[in-house]
Image 1 (tube, helix red, strand yellow):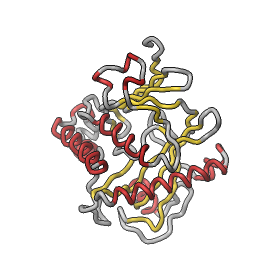
Image 2 (cartoon, rainbow, N blue to C red):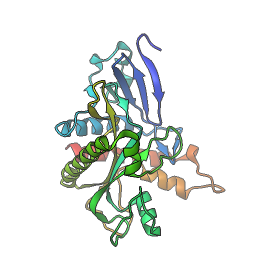
Image 3 (cartoon, rainbow, N blue to C red):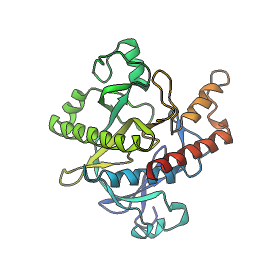
Image 4 (cartoon, helix red, strand yellow):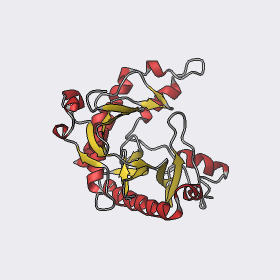
Length: 284
């Protein structure tokens, strides 16, 4: 506790501070996690990139749904945050009652959905019809919720399960907003030579039960961004995210164990460059 500043969450990437009854400060660090493990070495400027990308999209989509951002100017925050270390990575936000789910929109056949589809299994309670290759564009984007796990893996669940917990009317509004944001931002990014293959959204309610989008928005940590010029269905596309780190860990196991403590500085440097390139492409 620093005066009226109290850290309430230390996540994989973000530090969350309570600064008043109705406001929080969120600091996005340079930490990087892979396979649910935080690496001991950070990725330079990653937090600043994530913060800048989120702020860009929050502003871009504010006509679709209000968001939790109050300010990104340190002068609007308690004195504790008015230091160089917080510059470019810190936001003052509305405190919300966060919903206990993540809402993922998938536009392409990839990841866990591809694994389920390949086996002929349902995914999030849905049977996926059609004949798809890996990374192929879906006929229509799919709305696929999951739980939010503090530790370990999130669990994919059906839309009906979420309706049973928070109500069909609210889920209907959230699905409409998610698809609207995804389609709007997909078209924008496509013109910047980036494919948004999928992305996750988080929402909260204020004291009046108004719906806000919160946390982060369309960042390389919460989305799959693919390079459009390099894209080809049937192969794993070039991505603007931490895939390089995941690949290194997968390919450099010792006795079957991932070497989280030994990721090379070169891989971390290249990952930093990939994040920076993503920011440039989106905002230029």
